[in-house]
Length: 310
Image (tube, rainbow, N blue to C red; front, side):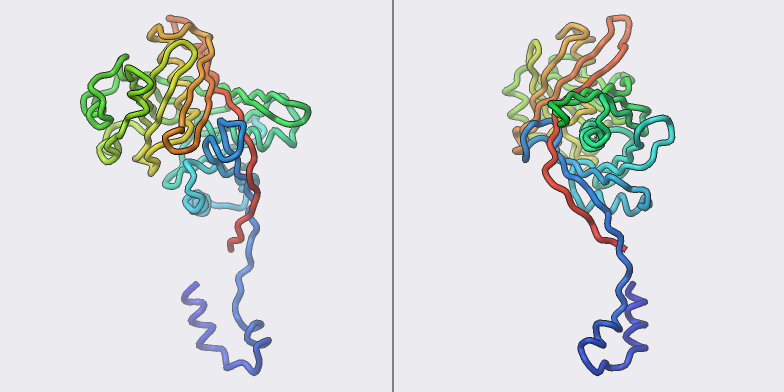
């Protein structure tokens, strides 16, 4: 663009009047790229986790999607493109720094945005981790809640438990520290009390250098749990609501006997960053294995707009 502008200045003569000035300046053609902003895992505006849904990204290349996600600066932005594997739509999910195969609040938020005009009881969304069905609950025509069936997480031992606990500022973990991969690698750490979770002041620089993408610390009992999730390696010190972590937390609690398989747990998240959120999760299966993982929540549309770009 700079080279083009210099060439225009070299070849243009001094205009005779202001109207000629306006007509002689090069103006590139612009595209209108529309988006919707919704707050996910909340039923009220200006809480939960912010999400930008670009509802028609067919004309965007990878670099432009990444630049738009960086411009938004939300935990994730989602770009909707035509399906290729039998779904209603395909989602491409970007953090401010990179594309990721799957994330919870972008999938649920996109289902709310797309499900409203579709008026179907279920929206099937293609992600980099496979097809994710989202069952929608309505009050009249309005979508008020959704349950997504997440990719089954792959569990493994975590190799740097001592370093992780030091970076978090915890003396010990209440359950074995393990990692679960469902498209993102979540490292799960159970703390002794909800108060200990709220008091955490992690060393984000140390966390960013440890294996794993998201570090989920949680505590509670029965159906009620408090969680905080840190992802400094992706430029997100603390996430307000992490749907992709909620499923593995339910699996972890069931596997270690803290909740029965098939029971619903409620997770509170985001209060420490001023975005209180509520997530619900269920792990179906038995000690023989996990059969299904569901994560649910509400979402509300709070804004609509468009970018004007060449």
